[in-house]
Length: 209
Image 1 (cartoon, rainbow, N blue to C red):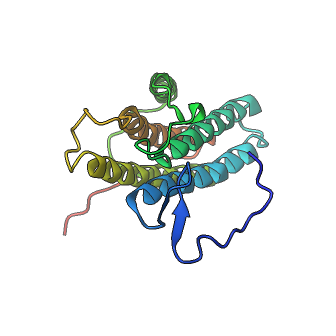
Image 2: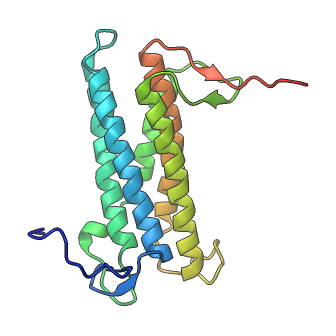
C-alpha cells in the first residue's frame, strides 16, 4: 500500500470509503467501531513509549520492560488487522487475508494475563487508576478498550438485527472475545507496571456519612 497523497478532499462533506470503495457516513456504526479501535491503538502507542522510558530506569532489568513493550506492539498490529476487518462490508467486498483474526491470539492473551497476575499481591478492593505514568496510561487504554468493545457490539447488533447473541451472522465473534480479554490484560498490566516501579497502588476506600 502506497500513501502518496494524504488529503483527497473526498470526505469534506462527511463521507468516507470502506475497504473496497463503498461510501458511508463518517458517523455510521462501522466507522465508530474501527475509529475507536484506532484511538485505542494510539493510546497503546503512548503506553509503549512510557514503558520504553521505564526500561531506562535502574530499578528493574530493562528486558522486563522491553518484553512488555514488544507485546504491546504486537497488540497494535492485531488491532490494525481488526480495524481492516471492521472496515470491510463482506456482503460487498471480499475480506483481505491481512484482515483475518486468529482466535489463538485470545489464548496468548490469557497466558499473558496469568503470567502477570501470578506475581502480583491479591486485591481486596477496587484499584484507583494512577501512581506511575505508565500505569495511569494503561488504565486509559483499558477504558478506551471497553468503549471500543461497546462500539463493536453496537455494530454486531445492527448486523444481527439487534440480537447480540446471534451467532449465525458472518461476524467474527472472536473479536469480541479478544477485546473483553484485552481490557483484563490492561488492568493487570497497570498493576504490574506499578509493582515493577515499587509504587503502592491506591485502592477505593468506602466512606460512610
